[in-house]
Image (cartoon, rainbow, N blue to C red):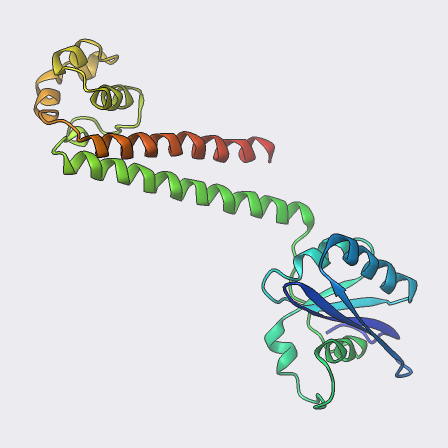
Length: 237
């Protein structure tokens, strides 16, 4: 738990606004309402600093506390509290508002702070999670392409291990363009794969329908976009 303070501020934050109560050891209190626009958040920051607040406490409600944390970080001591623990701490009077209750707990050092990672670590975690999402999206688009090929009885995956490598993409693009199989075989960039000409011919006996071509091209376009999006954050870490 935190040490006791002489003057603190408790915040009840919502999606579009927040209620803040400054509470002093002598019982004086001041409650104000702020919107969560940047302009109002900066006014709030000035307000708590000008009033000599030693600490500010806020519940970790969804992501609503993030902008408040951003404007206060490095400017004033901030506690992010577990919302469940705040609501289930005994001793609250029925006529006490949420912001005042949070301030009272903060004033008496009764809040156990949630762990907030340093800014650099948060940035890294955010980019890492985003990259993981891109990888998942990439896999989903690849699976869609495999499904489209399978539904057309085109069995490229039985001949080449990675249809999204150089040779695989050559074959896939040729199929999308509707090229003749003999023309496709002649242009294969891999000597090793050319030796599988008979197997390739066997795997590409049918043609894609127009709708399947459109869907596969769409997936390939998304994959290029996803690849760029996943590479860019990684190079900036």
